[in-house]
Length: 284
Image (cartoon, rainbow, N blue to C red; front, side):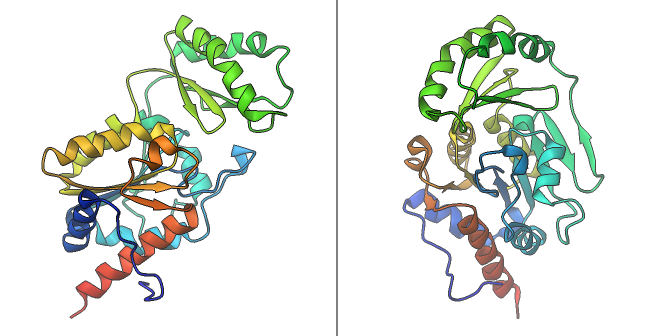
């Protein structure tokens, strides 16, 4: 761990450098929170084939015992992220928390149990009407079920993915509004889900739960903007923060990041390098 050939990259902002310094100085008071798709797992055409990068679990296993907490915050169902991440039973991850559906669900490694609210009736209504809304659209458009609490419409396989994405914004927005849902846009995906919870709310509540003094958050997509805003808010309350962006596909996120990395492999390397630095500091 802490391979000297891979030093920790320097954040581009003063706030980011302060956040990293605080994490390294007091790791036991730090929360490390991470998105899943695009951050810990490469984006793939079929989300059901998404898996955490091979370096992720070893890096988290090295880092998790040395910080206050590690949480994965994702739009996926919590149990799906656990399975696709390979997190259950991994060494060192016995206190990992996965906050699924943007924080509406919670899986704790300590109990291997998911706690979740009942399904929103609006999601079932949207699911029933969605085939009619999508009738006549590109055959490459497909629907991902998200455990009864959200429905995602993907355009990545369409002949013109971006054009299909833009064409669906208004009709899906109208459909969601009729049933009390919101549309969460992402990288060639539009997710219809209940309002009231987002990654920012989930992250802020979790940081307060742990009593952390520092938070690192890494994400890659528009849904992570709320978590970025939460970290920026927490900074005004005296909590140090480091914002990491995985990839450059979403400029709205990349432009606000303290540290820009090329993708999940680099995120895993960052986590491994932080674990190595902290381990060296612990050595007599």
